[in-house]
Length: 138
Image 1 (cartoon, rainbow, N blue to C red):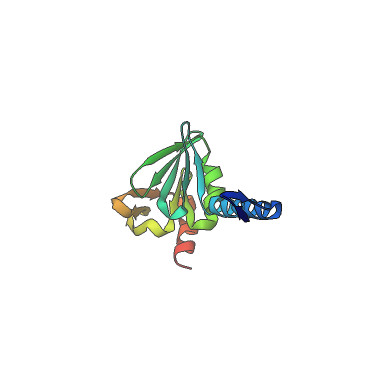
Image 2 (cartoon, one colour):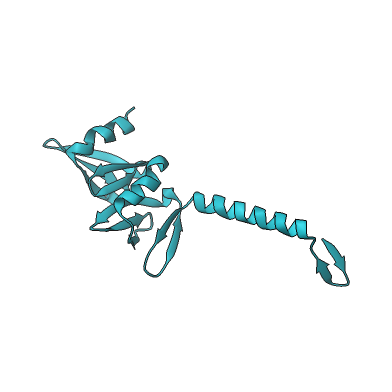
């Protein structure tokens, strides 16, 4: 960079390097987030801010730690693919849960209910029970 009388001249290579670093930083930022596209907004949430995701027909309802419900036109399968390697587990055909947000498990008459932060109760289906327990207690 050359400064001559309040005129800044950026060498071409420096500009290209700066733009490349900017793109790399932006890509790393977005890769660390879950991108949630809604009708009016695009949200960038870190996985630790999501408590659980619930399917609603071809939509997904994302519940964050602040109690907000975000409606996305993406399916639960889409979020399962995005979140499974980030500490989420499927506990029902219509629900993904952040394992870090589980405070306890209630068992009654052979069925299980997860107790999440803020006393949120999520039923565990029989078909996902073994996968849940093997992930929690392995």
